[in-house]
Amino acid sequence: MADTNLIDELQLTVRVPDDLPEEKLAAVRRTLASDEFLDRLRRAVGDVFQEFPELAPCRSTLSR
Image (cartoon, rainbow, N blue to C red; front, side, top):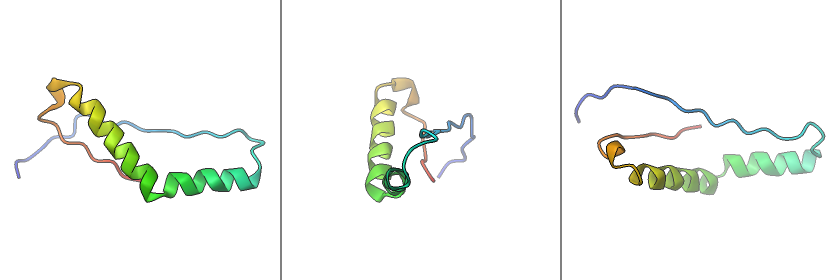
């Protein structure tokens, strides 16, 4: 594989209300930690990349 350069990093911040009940907070955490959520987020990022031809030579990674 050819060498690559990191040119940008993006960060996703998820905020919840201070008064969110613990059971709902736990549900949010479970969802964010789920493989399905991460898979769908990866697909969404890939879909957006495909909309911009300039990004065709780029590779992205998504991690927790």
